[in-house]
Image 1 (cartoon, rainbow, N blue to C red):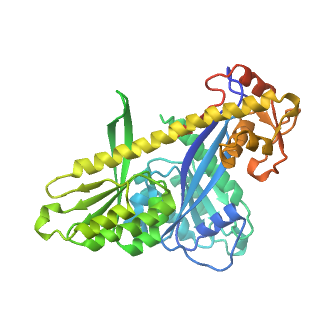
Image 2: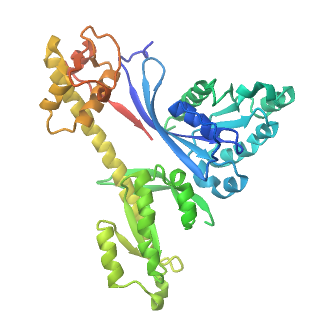
Image 3: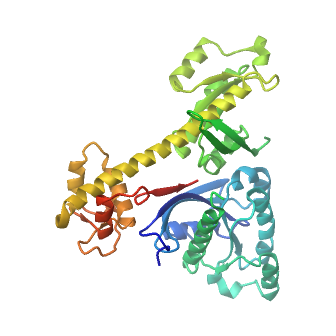
Length: 437
């Protein structure tokens, strides 16, 4: 049933971070491969470092509401030394956990507690699911009543799943359950370095006029080893919204190597605000960065602000951090303005199709009508309008959904009764898509 006092569908966009934890060889990567790609390999290739598997899913909410979730599944190798060193950046911001054990090795079940203790310390209480993997090897099952009793004592509220990455048994249930619980937890929250370290802080950032942004900021500090960057790039840089790239004024090569770091960040996080910090300027007598390096910098990073800093004296530090914070906030707000612009365009599409009456409009006709808009944006908004029950793929208004990108150009769309009503007297929130961050 729809929510009382409210008609139609509400779409809520969100990003989720769900991590898979457990010992080596329990099948974490195989479970992800089975769930996301319906694929299984008999050959074991252990995860080196960490990997991120992003995907987009629709999750049904109460009534007819929908969550459009951009989910990042984090897969960390099962080495305790790696967990100890990289726990903070890997688990910070986690919103759900699948803890995986191997039914042939009871010790992998008991060691789940160590993993979960670390996650809870960094991420706080989040939804957890316990996965008993490799049940296709039932003849080698080594987990019995004693282990089950221990599990119920340690994780009394966690759902359990019997899975086989090889056959696919139970995999869909495990993932859909933890996704659903994580979405529910996010909504319930109500918006209510020697290695890798995370430094969280809360700041007020002045905006245009008298507006203020209350920003919860997590500064991620990654050790400068290239091997670490190569191995852990995905989990560290995924979701980055701003970068402060630091070089040492005594070592010009550290400036040039910034490009390698930024290439990796851009590949994973996309275009984000960047600042370049020339650190250790208190050692001015040893300054080794001159006109040649400056020219190279302006060529490679023409729009990036630069800062002369000294961590020892504090010179320039406040300016560097406040600038990159401000630019990152501005970039996020600009994305919000783009979202409002999309809402206006969504209304224009609906008005055009509603005006066609019983004829409706084909996808190709919309491309011709809105030539100044990219086809990808038109198709995204068609999908949103169908989800919002303002448009239908059938003149009778029957509720079906096919992604516009996968439909032929002759596919026609009709305004539903609800869509016609909105077109005639649009309400402020009828076509809103809520962004949850």
